[in-house]
Length: 95
Image (cartoon, rainbow, N blue to C red; front, side, top):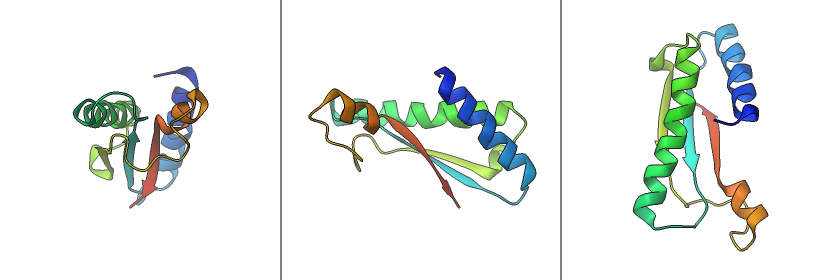
């Protein structure tokens, strides 16, 4: 996980510690490089890495779920490197 990712996880952990009823879905995504099977696994791994980082900080795993969606639901054009970088992401959704 990159430094900015660790900072984001620290902030998310603070929010979760301040609201014990808050539950989050952690959704991983990729760009369209590679095949679907690879992208699904990569996105699952990306979401799991965030889940593991949050639980390592003391948050109960029962409050979290992690899923990977591969290259589905891009938020930017995969035709450019900038767009691909935006599509390689993890989103947190309140459950």
